Amino acid sequence: MVIKPTSSAPFTAWRLAEHAIAAGVPAGVINVVIGPGGAVGAALVEHPSTRLITFTGSTEVGKGIAERAGRHAKRVILELGGMDPFLVLDDAPIGATVAAAVRGAFGYSGQVCTASKRLLVAESVADEFARKLAHAASELRVGPALEETTQVGPLIDGAALDRMDGLVGDAVGRDARVLTGGRRRPGSVGHFYEPTVLDAVPRGARVALEEPFGPVVPVLRFRDDEEAIEIANSTPYGLQAAVYTNDLGRAFRIARGIRAGGVHINDPTNLRWDALPFGGVKESGLGREGLRYAMQEMTEVKLISVNFAGP
Image 1 (tube, rainbow, N blue to C red):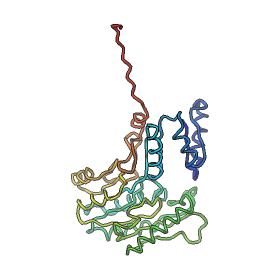
Image 2 (image 1 turned 60 degrees about the vertical axis):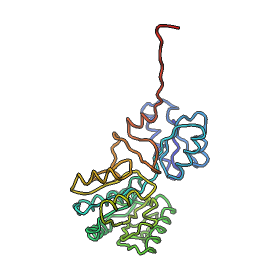
Image 3 (image 1 turned 90 degrees about the horizontal axis):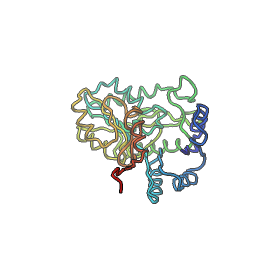
Image 4 (image 1 turned 180 degrees about the vertical axis):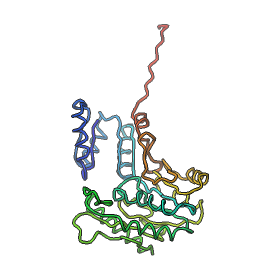
């Protein structure tokens, strides 16, 4: 196999291949090629020796890869973007739910495809939830990723900081309120953005529609379960979702109504077990990852029959 990691962070894949070879994987089985996706990635997709392409990244790039692969009838597995909704029903335990939302929204600085990117909260508890979430987010320790006490590390590059500024500015321009954060970390060297909670965010705001991939999370309010499902399904994405409630019957009804590859009840959206199927619907991807399921996706079924009676 040939691995083409992102040019922004290639060294993890490089070291993984080194360790695999040191552990006894024969030379040539795992190969790492570093370079720009437009040139290297396109060549790998269209090369006649490539039989399957599995891609993790943005929906825009994934669509381009699927188009190129389709011209050659090649199989693809796509794990793309998400706008993973985190639903808070009116009977959810606020303290535990806020703690889970903090993990879901700000883990890895929000730079995870399964991060909790939209917090959909019942109107009757939205004020309390948003206030406590903002307080918890304001206490997170922002700093270098290699420091043990860091809870929110840097973003990948300067363009990510610009994207955060744009999303926050657009939301504020639509009368959303910044409860905490909303700016780059003052006086710091590096790509640091303060954990940000936006309240009273309208559904048309960019931060409610576009994957932020950073520590910015909007709170959107709903009146009833039907509206919660409608908002959850209102983007082109369908990767993962979460539902917090003490009523399991209600949770299952909502989970069935949400179009997503996975719905977690009383766990955040970024929960993942590699032994279970993982992948999205709609523009969040094609196929499934996760041990057995990945092997099935990557296996071609061949029939060989024998007529023992002879010709």
